[in-house]
Amino acid sequence: MKTHATPDLASQSPLQATAGVPPTDRYLRLALVQSAAESLEEFATGLRQRMHSPSAAELVVYPELHLCSLGMESMSQEAYYAAYAEPLDGPRGRQLAELAREFGIWLIPGTVLERADDGRVYNTAVVYDPHGELVARYRKIFTWRPFEPMCVGREFVVFDIPGKGRVGLSICYDAWYPELSRHLAWMGAELIVNLVQTPTTGRIPEVPINVANAIVNQVWVASVNGAAPTAFGKSLLIDPEGNIRIESGGMEACTLLGIVDFNQVSAARRLGTNGDSWPWNHFQEGDTPLSLPLYNGHIDPASWRPALPPETPVSLRPTDGRNER
Image (cartoon, rainbow, N blue to C red):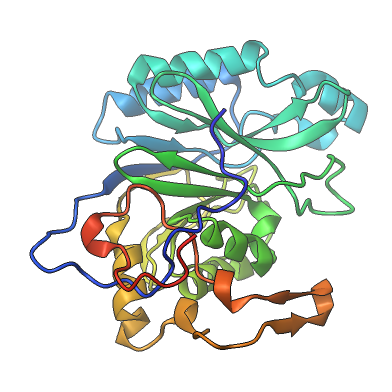
């Protein structure tokens, strides 16, 4: 399993283009599937239909608990876990891996109920590569307490799509905590995928929250919610300057298709959001650490800027040599 728990602290200075070297194209065709909860059999049928239609994409993303929500409103916690919780390498995981391999896609089938070796149950996002390998798993940190009984995770997770860029994982209520999105961006995430299952009007403030996370971190954000009757919809894709590129009209079932250009992250950080804001470049050489009493810690100017994913083109990498490790 290839995840990144700590950033690569390569040169972190403002990005400057290298003259005469054109940027490498890093486009990713993305499908956000806003759908009501499905059984695994319905999921497989729907995915096959999408992959044999104009809705085909390189990365296909489904909502939170997409395969674990049928009938849950009438279940006790014990019955819910008995129905849906299983190890990631169990029958469900093997079938999801086979579907990713069948179509040669990156697949995020939403989140699943993961039963760990010690019997604890987590709300876990899983990522399969085109070979059917489980390349990342993220256990939700900010569960919706007290209504969500699953155990909480303790690790931020990003993964790389070779030739494209780095992706960070976020689940629903995580988006409300700016520390999570900031940490993923610091680890080098250029796209944050936020998997959601919000059935209430709480989805309305989640839209500007996701836009804000994109703006202040200068990253793409893809937030996909379920559809009626199990969720409130309003899925969307936001670019690094906060522009909503695609969005659903409401709660209806739909597939949103978009193109993520990872180089727009580098461009926003080099040229500025709207040409005049460089949040990652605030701290300068000689600045002292900024105390953060809330966290009993501090911001160290020497390690403030985000990691550079390995796919960042040479023409968009820093050139002044500051903060190299």
